[in-house]
Image 1 (tube, protein in one colour):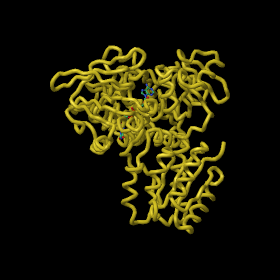
Image 2 (cartoon, helix red, strand yellow):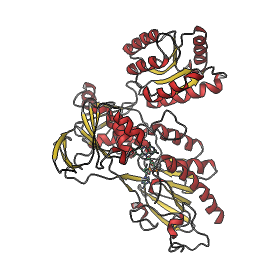
Image 3 (tube, protein in one colour):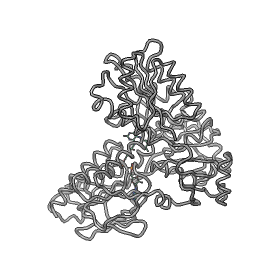
Image 4 (tube, helix red, strand yellow):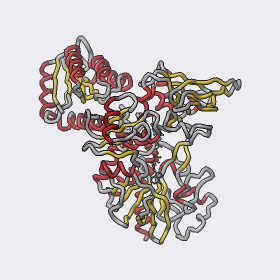
Length: 553
Ligand SMILES: Cc1cc2nc3c(=O)[nH]c(=O)nc-3n(C[C@H](O)[C@H](O)[C@H](O)COP(=O)(O)OP(=O)(O)OC[C@H]3O[C@@H](n4cnc5c(N)ncnc54)[C@H](O)[C@@H]3O)c2cc1C
């Protein structure tokens, strides 16, 4: 396969030569570098590349060009290659324009000229955006192909699993794509009934479990050791942060994740408020970076693997895993987060995966290109999903129980929704029924003000109606609040008394449960803030308390 392309545009021949020289020097072995002296010349080249089926990884354009500015060029190039990364070269005076472009054309980065030395000012930035691009790039006809029926619930789960574990795959609809029928016929499988997964080497599995796929693609599901200093259950932002800090501070660390690292954050298409990423980043990128970081520092990551129970055999905690194995540790961090509340309506379960989705807007959005869809919920996750879906669907209706969108959503998302012409918001409504034989066809919506009811024809509804803590696996071991969230630190002893059964002379540490050495962080913790940054912060803090606990033993 030919190398992907980097296109550089600058009207100043001297600057263009310097960019070209630097790009060739650093990236020439893996990318084809094309330099152009104007936006219009570059667009001609880009259109030809598209016709040839070439992959473009990056556009890097100077803002100050007479006929077409860098931002204008990037906006047009984005129409042709929406997934290519966009970097703007600016003078100091153009900073405002560059910041505005982050919103208008989803600029990935801007660089101030001059960029000397390139090793410090140019290459790290470009390496970062190129590695993001590589992570989302699906090379044609290589890797895994998933063949199935559009409404197959298991096919949907497999898509979600592969996407969330950053395993590139190609989806082939057995009803519409000839290649899908050919592959299914040669495997002797009725792919309309059972999804078929074909691996790069031509072997296949029929309706495989996540664990079977994991084994084939080399994900680790069994612990290497029987004993660890620190075991973390849950691989969302909080668990990942605990793994990074635990491993970096010399603790033998194991993280166990049931579905895919990244947790809820891994399901979102764009995180705008995480510190240090002015252009935002996707949840998948955050998860990929964190797993790479934790693994590089020496943490062991098991996925998919779930904790199903824990017992205390002082001073050890023994965690039972779903495959029947167990691991023991001196300190345990519970970071199992929350899960989506499900719709309590007849037929909702039957249609789940066939038009009704919980938090799967990123995976499924492109399958609803040109269709009418709904988003149910009024929080930030619903808002992000609506904005993402609007890029694909013909129309998105946001159904909100509250009287206004602003009641539960950040202002920047309310503004984005207001500025998106194919999103309609219907406030003060309830969804009271879902309809569809094979897949979702419509939902019934009642107006809470006047009680009127009407059908809303939609091909899909993405549901974000709140969350419940994931604590079943802990049995009665740790104390929880009325809503089931785990109590820690001072919350355990509101009356000034020590928690029941607590035998130590010290009080529980800030993030410690009523069992010494069992800590709890992130969304599953009572009183937590339910944000990525706070989940990450708590994961990091917990490791500090783990050290103090270990020092006491
Ligand atoms: C769609 C969406 C968009 C969001 N956008 C933003 C945003 O832009 N900014 C922001 O700050 N916050 C955002 N949030 C909130 C943010 O994602 C959460 O606050 C954060 O992910 C909490 O992290 P956590 O690690 O505590 O839990 P989670 O992310 O819930 O992760 C918990 C993990 O534990 C695993 N697990 C559960 N039980 C077990 C078990 N028994 N064994 C093994 N593993 C288990 C789960 O599979 C999961 O991966 C968003 C949330 C959603 C749903």
